[in-house]
Image (cartoon, rainbow, N blue to C red; front, side, top):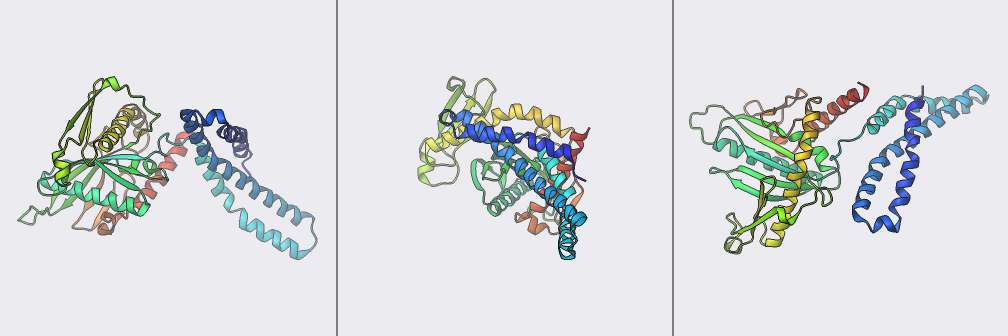
Length: 362
């Protein structure tokens, strides 16, 4: 049975979709980059809904035509073909309706953005820093598999390896933040540390915070509000990096937010990267309110402000990784640490979609 209300909702968006198409080709809009970016974003968000609606409509028309043949046609061969058509299409209708219902729920506003990721070693001293390094390697491998670009903007190495803190940007064309947002929270590891001589298992932790990257038009920065300091880079990179004032520290005076970048040889490149991070952190002061709101409703999402929320345990003696939000486990920890985390994210997305449908129905 067709859901006519669902079809009407999709078809009602076609005029808006056509209007956006026309506006995007208008010279007036193309000369106003801020407006063009927003309209293009709206257009891309509508596109999958319109395409799914047209596919759904086509399937319903074909089922109706097959039914008509069964009622009015005497030729048994044609009737058999119509029967096969109906048997093929009818089971797909509920699945298609579920897909459209999900598409009609407004997406989280920043899913299509790139992501800024911050990993910090937590409780556990040197072992926590080593584990933070393991997580960074895991995300690096995952980014490589997805074809994303990874750029480090800030890092503080641990005394025995890994990182006390590392901040990096992930960029790609397939909604990086919408994939990586599930990684925010406390990651806990249980294993015998490299520094342990008695062979005892220790529990350590690292926190991960994932932010949507703010675009150039998301935040307007007043240069008068920013203090810029230059200093010599202290990290690896050779003599040229360590002896020139290429590192940049920016302080946003009204908010007190401080960011720095020293990964590039060029002061200008470091400044660009630092500005990107500053915009992102300011944008996320507002985004945080949104996250706090949905974190209360959805177990799949953790507010980035809540660094105490344990989301996942990596148990090395048992070779197991467990995501506590959805009670999902995988007994191939080496593969997971090698960047094979897509299955876990897929399961989190399925769980979140169920929560979003429930929200929409409440």
